[in-house]
Image (cartoon, rainbow, N blue to C red; front, side, top):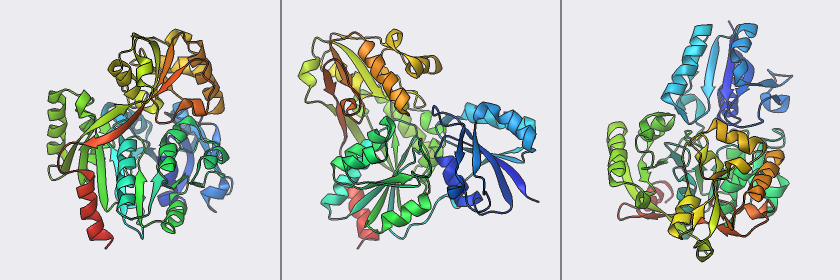
Length: 441
């Protein structure tokens, strides 16, 4: 008997789980996706062109709050949780709600959702959003290029626009960012790779994406999103942990899964963390995966504009997801403001508008910094207006992309960069030498 399924997601893992397991599976009927975590991703449809012949009308995407009504209306048998960076309490509250309404609550594992590549795969994942995956991926791609390998990055999905157009996306230059109408969140992840001469793939159908990427790669580098697991079977699984959130590696889903899968754990940001918190990260690793290699590292915050910050009243703009579902209270911009001796850090909340203002209500831990949220053109304009309304001498931009490339800021800016710097051995170079000797020679 065909089982009726709802997939709870955030426009990424949910589509991947559908594509790999449910799309051509006649034993199941996916009645809808539900959307959460990302603004403006509900009230869309997973198009029939991507959904396959079993779904000639496509699949509706509903807001997650409608889940009880959906379950009752369709007599749903299973609800599959398919998005990331949720506390264990939150996961079990969702499970309890679903179970109380009748259906099974399902967490899909690696066997059914990880695709095997014909090329060696290195994955970079994390225990929480904002641990430092991006700087780690950049360092790995740079080292592999220096070693003579052609590396192609495949980035965790962020398909917030027209899903048909976003089925397979390739980014080789800055023009591609405009061609694909990238959001701030996408640019933050793609720009630095492009700058380093590395091709990036992303999109919706990660089976098709992998086949395209394999044509031009010696090594596939999976650049993960949030604390989600890899979409591909990894030959080397590198996981980043953050001592500013020392116990989160074993308290957030599916971060602990990543930690247990890890061949290597990179503990980042150590120079700005307490020694006791670094020790607590080590305890979490020992609990979940005592055989993993550990790399100790700093996140080195630099800026050519650093001298301009001194004695200024500054507005600090940080990476949005790190602050929101990553639950960090600050990022590289805040660290830089202190390092370069800003006179004060302006509290921006009362000057914000629209969805930017709403983010402070949804994430009350955000205080004296501004999250660079830009999931849509409308939200990007709201971010621009919020920045321009905030009185300050200087805007400190701590996002991975320089916002002035996308929005007009009416005051001086200082752009902050941050890069991974390992401490001692093992380091990424030695790990990659061992990996390439085994898989590429």
